[in-house]
Image 1 (cartoon, rainbow, N blue to C red):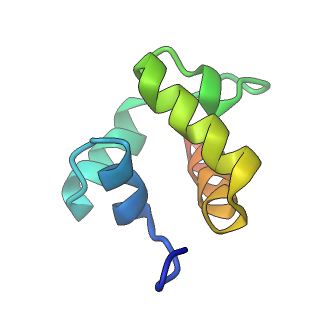
Image 2: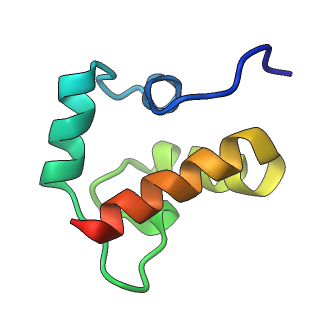
Length: 77
């Protein structure tokens, strides 16, 4: 169980992605999802990253909200 609410930084850390504020901003500038595409299907993520996101969303309410936020940000750009 987490002692703190997960953040976008901790999500990127969990996925093995660079997690500085600038790196996260560049990620959302560079990558985008189609209107109906789920983040767990994103071809710019590895199989392991997509699986981790799917599991976070399905199994852990604290992470699920953050995964949803990530997906929303990828749809906006």
